[in-house]
Each structure stands twice: as C-alpha cells, then as structure tokens.
Length: 131
View 1 (cartoon, rainbow, N blue to C red):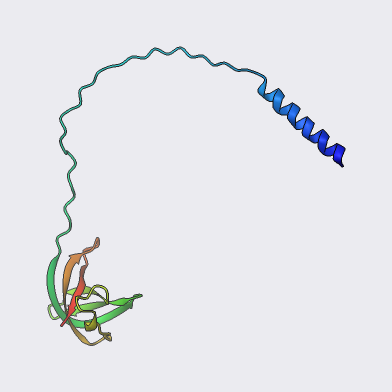
View 2: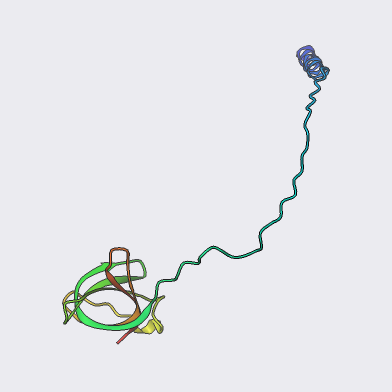
C-alpha cells in the first residue's frame, strides 16, 4: 500500500513538472493611436417622467364586492351617480389604524383617500380615512 501511494505521488509530480516545462510566448504587434475628443457640455437631456397626479377624494356608496387581502381588503363601491370605485382599505394605509373596520356587501361606506386611475382606466382610492 505504501509503495502504491509513493508511486502515485511520484507520477503526479512528473506530470506536473512536464506540463509546466513548455514555454509559450505570445507576441502581438499593436499600434496605439490616440485621438483627442472634446466632450460636449454637460446637459441633462433625459426627461424625467411625470408622477401620476394623485388627488384626495371622498366617496360614498354601496359596497358591491369585496376582495380580501393579507392586511386589509379592496371593496368595489358604486356611488349614487353610478360611478364605480375600487377602494383599498388596510391598517398600514390608514392615517389612524384604529379606524379600520370590515364591511359586508350591501353596506354603505364613505371613505377619503388618494384617488388614481389604473392602466385599464378604473377609479381607485387608497383609503386614508374611513368616515
């Protein structure tokens, strides 16, 4: 067993030395050309996108649907003018989290919050206050 280990060690050493003994030289001829370029004056040409305008809105209407979330819910409200709003009510969005209350379909709900439209044009409100 001892002889086998010695033979393997010797063979490994011979292979390692043999692979390192060959020298390879790589030469490249490159001509370096430098050109002086004057940078244009620094101006910001990137237009910053406008943030969607949010307005505070108060809505009152009848709850027609409820979609439960992990820390709140989204209620679909239909106003007297037949406008539909999706209002998101959660503990973290309310100014005073103690105002949080659950509602059922058919109840009337009055809320105030940040109004915005989504990509499909639906009216949404992130509720800050339940009236």
